[in-house]
Image (cartoon, rainbow, N blue to C red; front, side):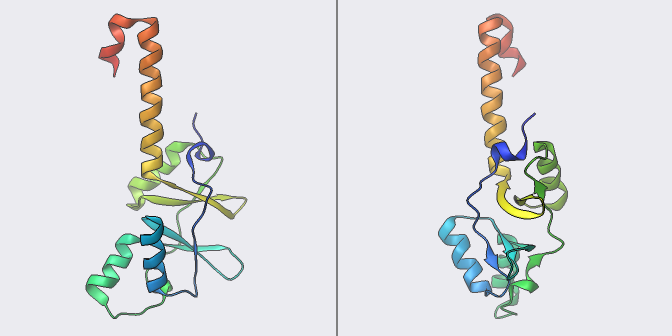
Length: 144
């Protein structure tokens, strides 16, 4: 079964809690992100700020409070890099978010997005179709 470590992005872009909402907006635009893990001064994950939360700030609260703490999701849902992909899928649905921080022994080691998961599922389905077509060409088209 696919584990999070097989589909995660290990190039983490995070933001320190002390940074401003404007810096979070800049990072999200620059890196084309839907969410940013928020870390404390020791690099420990303390929350997640999403594009939806920042849109609330821009459209409903501006000038609002510029501190990230007011717009981040806490407690922050996470997945461990050894977790099965199904856990991420369940959290995407139950938490209504599209990006999750990935941890290993409590440390932030990456992120996984719903797009990462869908891309992996799409590739896996294609491989299954190819294998089935080689084994049973007349029935494989109907299975997927």
